[in-house]
Image 1: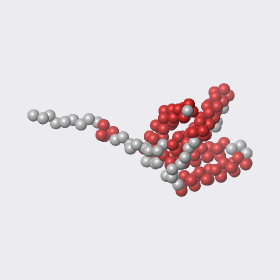
Image 2: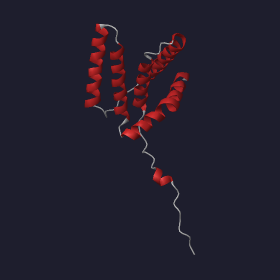
Image 3: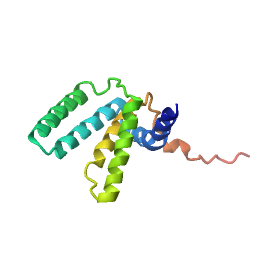
Image 4: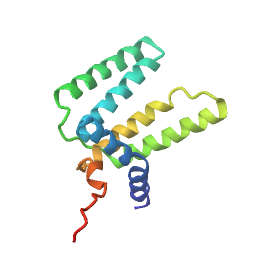
Length: 143
């Protein structure tokens, strides 16, 4: 139960509001944004691969993510709380490693994964607020 509360707090305060704004600005669904960030994470893995086998594997994953983002961008996706919390722990460990050793390369991968996973759990995107409606209208004086 405590893990669900932690996951809910992380999503509600850190990830969901910027994802909703991004969806509103780009007029994309949350599922398309999820697939976009999975594609970005796969490209980051491909960029950071150090061996030939790693490059081939990340290249194949990048290709699959690109095809998935292109062919079924707006199809609903699923996300598991265990995986999101595992990604949070791995991001925190990478940040701790960056603080202690000053090697920050690789921290962005877990951030991209978390954005993709938290975008997948959003079910509805509220409409964009129109600023023109919020400005008060001056009324003509009545006599």
